[in-house]
Length: 581
Image 1 (cartoon, rainbow, N blue to C red):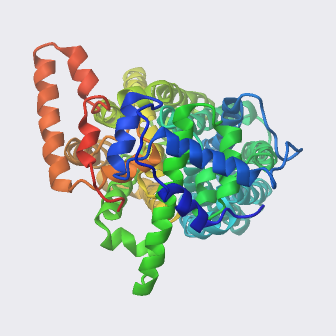
Image 2 (image 1 turned 180 degrees about the horizontal axis):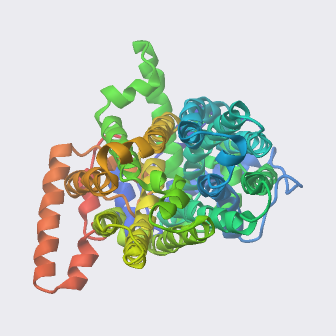
């Protein structure tokens, strides 16, 4: 397909008439868009731009085909895209919980010692660190869709190797390859979804990725329970992920590329054609959003061209451009915080931890489903209400909840384990685990939503590469050192002192420095980080104090309506005339 000439786009966008129409898709949306761009675009301009795109597309348009499905309602195709892409979350979750079940019988059958088991558990997140370095080039050269397809190939090869392993070398090779696929996939799927869906459901649908991670973890524990009594059960357990990687690979072949990525590549006509298929152009707001996206990407490309004279790699904007630097620090702080509260250490060693408090091998496998089930159920509210309540609400209400869970788990470790106290210890531990996992569910959704939306389009691949590397490096550190930290700090010291301490520090960071990005397009979020950090901190502290005062006077409706920062109170208009970067 021919590229839509960027000069022509610039001409179309810049050709502005002064006789504006006051009609808009939504009074609030229209006001925000006009505030963001001082050129005074109106519905007339948007219609002219869309009409021009239609005329340019007509000679080269392709109809529906076997690999180009088109549905009558664009929302249905969007849901199919989100469903298949988010299946990567199932693979991620499966491989976390499957290794937990395999750890019960695999070490004895293959003669692995404790240190080798630690390496096996941690080699997938280590491979994911390597995969994160491939994420940027894969996204830039293959696109979001191509990168996801590549990840499924790594998943399939890695799963086959680990299921057929006959020695330590073969096992860690399979785990490493599996991890490379994970590293590419976890940084691409949230971006693919975020770039393809509307602002009003973006947080909800990106949260579906975490829902599928939790679903995969539950399925992994179920698979382990099914095969636990079968000879060489660990081979069936580890090989079961092949089914999902194959389904995901086939499904992605039929799905379109992200329109924002295509626009970033200068393929404006292809971007517009796909936008029509997945978003439609009948709704006024969809037309405005495409127009603003086109302008923003064009401006970013022009800025990138001007920066080339400085001979500076584009990713160094994370250091030298304040808006990009703020987004980078925020996204990666949240990603690391999500890891260092211990979630993956607990997930990878779930069956072992259950055995430590007195459950036998079979019961430990069955009871592991309780923790996975709590995490799964905990993600459901975030899918339904992520955009309604906002990012700050979920972060600042969920973190204290799973901190309490850590306190209860630590308390269970402090009770001497003997036949008389075993049921008490088990009950206390399971209670703490359910609270921890249940409250972590919505919080985990945030760790995928935030990095997928805060980076500008021209830096999104690089930003996700760094964020992906951060989360996988944190995952590797926690899983590889988990048993050693237990010995050095004691179980209660690791649970409450380390994981709980990180959670407490994270809560302070969120209260002071976390911005609200709900109900904004990706282009509108560009402007959020133009605000100086000191100003954001002052506003967050003032808003928190107001919320606490309302709670103390039992004005709960007001408190919870403001805790995430309302998009209808004019707050977004403070970014008038702010630059894109």
